[in-house]
Length: 121
Image (cartoon, rainbow, N blue to C red):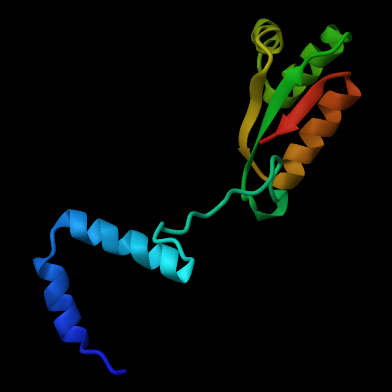
């Protein structure tokens, strides 16, 4: 059976919103489909790190060797002792932002070697 597309469109233009809503529901049920727009789903926690251009190195927990971590933060950031201590005391805190993957991994290794827990975001 051939159908007249223009006639169908003309009928739809004259229909009320309620009628169109009922039509959509009937089509969804008849053909087992959904009229909802598809939604992109984000990756799992941690995501695909290789796809990122820049990272933020976050000090999650300074650990028990806080003095070593403060010294490492001071060396990495170039901050003074007091500012580095405040950054460590304020954990979780961003140590460096918008850094390349290699640099982020280097910073993470240094902080973890000092006893800290670090997250790359």
